[in-house]
Picture: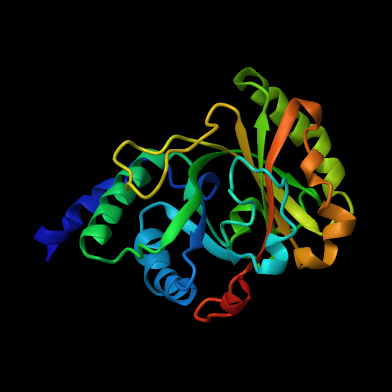
Length: 277
């Protein structure tokens, strides 16, 4: 068995390189199951792919799935999104944290394992990747300062909702300025007194050339920021009072390409599957 799995190599690998808990990188993937395949997709992802294609991989240490019912899909803006066409596409979202400094190591494994899963017919084909990108962590802004869960807790803490927001700077050289404006001014102001406990900010990285063919190359690598708002309340309950104006985030120097609310799935169940259409 050791010859087949190269077990001795694991001891060597564990003794070198970073092994902290900071979410230095993330995988954020929004997917639309094809009509009529919603239940099959949900069971495949929860029963197999979430584990074999994600959590069992080295350096991917936290994950959570989210769902947008039709009610939540209809809250999305802008109507003409560069991310989701139509803007309601992508009713399932999965978010994963990857250990800082282990992106290259993880990518080698994820390409290899997904090639194997595809070869072994363990990939559900009746789905479309609307927005799938590996991302580098840029900042986390907290509502309550040092109190409360940290960003490395975020995918395990029982948050009641999440908002995926995608913002493009006007030009590559303006992204750093946009990030500084969000981190130091706009996000702290919007978080104060809101149901959102924190916002994590990432920037996308290109997918490897040997990625699976059903996943399109990442757009906006030089201009885009991806924000995850972690909510303590169901977004449908607090949308008008706190989040309906997120399309204006960043001001005239930025374009918001997507604001999409989600609620957590309940693992091992098909809850909400009948409310997607």
